[in-house]
Length: 110
Image (cartoon, rainbow, N blue to C red; front, side, top):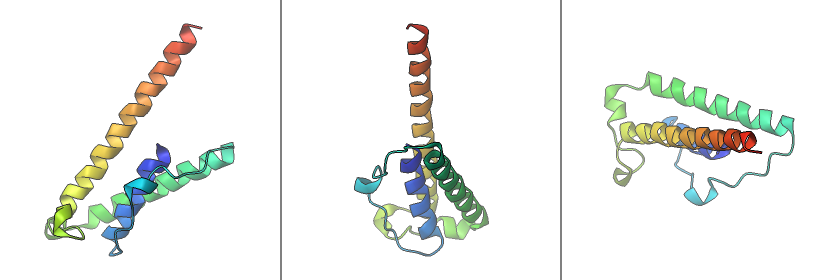
């Protein structure tokens, strides 16, 4: 899920910087398995770096920019897409917390 959320954050940040929209849902879980602590640290560092970049770009946007069309009118405006990124991230954070709770309860019952 860390890769999945980071994938969308990085993809939208690229658009916010003036790039093209290249992310696709079908690739949002295409990540090699984490096999070491170093793999995990690299993934978390990328997630944090992408998130900080996204926050920095959004913080500098004007109201006028926020309500312009995002890439194409069919995608709504920048504001809506930023909101979707926030909702998406919270959704998956909730999943992580539920999984953590299930694991913790399972360990108690063993």
